[in-house]
Length: 324
Ligand SMILES: Cc1cc2nc3c(=O)[nH]c(=O)nc-3n(C[C@H](O)[C@H](O)[C@H](O)COP(=O)(O)OP(=O)(O)OC[C@H]3O[C@@H](n4cnc5c(N)ncnc54)[C@H](O)[C@@H]3O)c2cc1C
Image 1: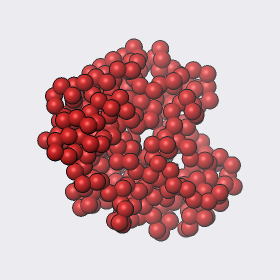
Image 2 (image 1 turned 180 degrees about the horizontal axis):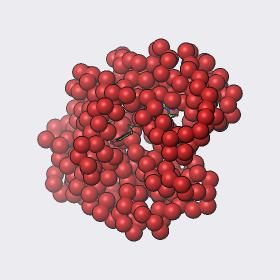
Image 3 (image 1 turned 60 degrees about the horizontal axis):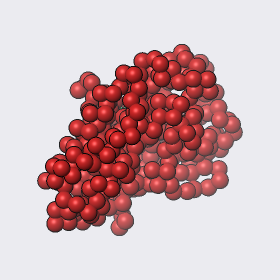
Image 4 (image 1 turned 135 degrees about the vertical axis):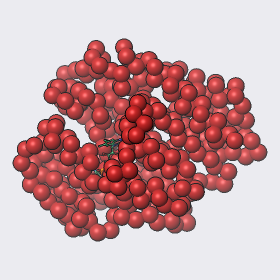
């Protein structure tokens, strides 16, 4: 690990100033469960760490009239244990229960979870890959069992965050503070694929911090389900996952959001599957048609075509759970 300056921030404005001064050579450190391993593996070498764990006011879960607000430093285990999340946002609760291990969830924060970097072994290893400014994506002809089958464009990382998949399905938004002020962005627009930015997974500028995630209250009749497949059952990243949030009325799906995880560089919203089920009863035939539609444009690499059927299966399971 290389030497770096350590700047604990006591106010959001301190953190932004410290990031701004460093001109792209600083990283925010929250729980550190992702960042510190990148530093130790020498794949990220910032000159400065801006520690935001010292910020006093970003640990909260607040219920207001429109929805629930989660401070960026709230740990995943605190969110998982929250009574409102358990009752009203089962999709998020299910996603958190299968995120990493309890010890990591005790340390990992909401902001860090959605900003964690991909686990691609070429990105995290001694390879000069496209995402690090190099000339090629080694996954295309290399070991690509865990890589993208949808939305890969030159680079085939998959977004690693289970929370992110759930939050896109829940139509969440993120509040961002930076030297130009404050803004709120739908989380779906927060993530960007390699066709937009080959070096980054989201729109955050170097001097910006996520301060809050907002999730609107689900409308009456909403049901949600999240299913994930992982190789190691004790803790592991998604081989694939499927989140469905559906507003049901008299057995008919009035509105729906379908998001796939572990299969694309961003949490992958499947409008194809949504179009199939919207306005219909969730019969076995409709669910089958929707699951086929979601994967119709999949382009597996040499070692990951198993993800196509696996994802269809997970999506079928999530649809079945919301239809009961
Ligand atoms: C063994 C292991 C298994 C795991 N399994 C899973 C899994 O199954 N599913 C899953 O989803 N995740 C998994 N993870 C990843 C884990 O969820 C993340 O490491 C964690 O959520 C990151 O949160 P953190 O607070 O520790 O972030 P940090 O490590 O502090 O930061 C992560 C990144 O986010 C940035 N960042 C942090 N906070 C903010 C903020 N407020 N605003 C802007 N940028 C910010 C940092 O600069 C850094 O780049 C696993 C991790 C490990 C070590």
